[in-house]
Image 1 (cartoon, helix red, strand yellow):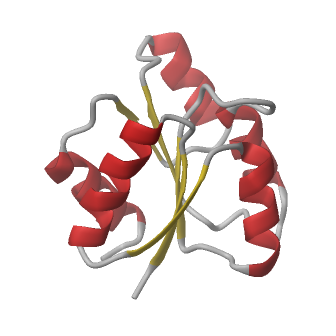
Image 2 (image 1 turned 135 degrees about the vertical axis):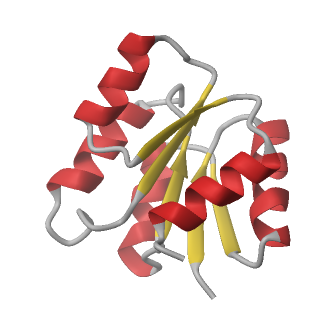
Length: 121
């Protein structure tokens, strides 16, 4: 089973995304900040990251750039899932290396399809 790390500070959004992905057969671990995500990745590397942009501390854009600039984690797909939905935000996501950019509230089918495509399933 593929492991997904959800980085989302909103309890409601985190639970919803986790439920969608768990129901699709993924193993999901969730954290509320980029700093917590970095700690998890030291010991339990995910197959994919679902990432919010607005987070306490380091933003999702910053975290995505760090993941993509580290040779050890550069191949991990990142799906940004955010309320920020302007073209500028989407461009920042692409420039940071995100594989996909979804806007909230995210639909279950779209999230699952996007995750499966990013994992080549």
